[in-house]
Amino acid sequence: MTASIVGWAHTPFGKLEAETVESLIVRVAADALADAGIAAADVDEIILGHFNAGFSPQDFTAALVLQADPELRFKPATRVENACATGSAAVHQAVKSVAAGAKIVLVVGVEQMTKTPGPEIGKNLLRASYLIEDGDTPAGFAGVFGNIAQKYFQKYGDQSDALAMIAAKNHHNGVSNPYAQMRKDIGFDFCRAEGDKNPFVAGPLKRTDCSLVSDGAAALVITDADTAKAMSKAVTIKATAHAQDFLPMSKRDILRFEGCSVAWQRALQSAGATLQDLSFVETHDCFTIAELIEYEAMGLTPAGQGARAIKEGWTRKDGKLPINPSGGLKAKGHPIGATGVSMHVLCAMQLLGQAPEGMQIKDAKLAGIFNMGGAAVANYVSLLEPAR
Image: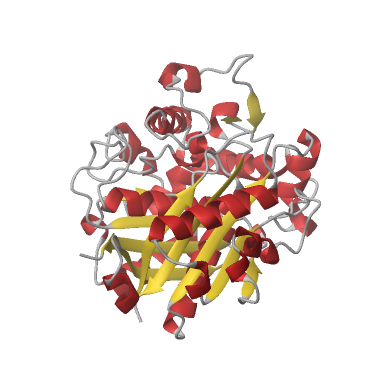
């Protein structure tokens, strides 16, 4: 049974001091239902993506969605979590629910991170790694990816130019995204140079190589194909794939992101599509080195040659495969539980020609999404196309 996105909502991402996890959930849940023109009473199931890991004192949050409308009371509501891929885990669970017979599923993704003190943020994020091996990594989760970047540089040469180009591209794109946390075109020179405002954080990674600490929420209304036919707008979820890899990096070649490759291959095969059929991609640039390796893992370049894709302009908005026209996690922000849901919202907007001016990819027909939990551990790909 094909699933379709028929409505959505998205808060700005950033430091939202006046909000709580509860208020963010309630806001986007109500707005998404209103956007779809669907009554709360008609919802069959609720899926909440919320990582938490110590960011919010309020855990056990699935029932908070019910507070968006009294008619949601007694609906099945479940929270899902898969580290930084939590949002896509929620979306994929909704797709499975539709395949199992549900007609209307409400999906919400949320995180509030900025109220947590800095040292605790690093400790919380490190929980998405294998603590037995990585628990003492300096600089926390950034240190994990700093080590990956260092190994990549040792094998393939210094990629500092390519990483700075990726950061600059995504910040340039983020200017056009009204939901983005950082809407400032900071340029290649700033991203490339180490300085007081752009210090090294971990290994060869500088501050501009790291995604932002963010608050925010996004929501989707997902229906079966028959229900979608009666809706004012609809985007078909053409294929989904989820490949989970070993948690310990010692059990795999961390420079290959094999789970990412497998997920892309499965999704493209399921859709009967190739990489060349994609109009654009939203990919998981938690760190610039991740986006670089993802170019290779998705098949855009051979291993070790990811820098070609950015240096030759392939992944810019006017390139042959625009990647992160939203600004990505780098500029848009990364409220963990909301990220994957946000990716699906923004891709749906693109496919219906409803993306903000300057962000819209012309004649977008097939969108690819890659959302990753941990260091290429939880790997989710979705392919979306207009329903009509």
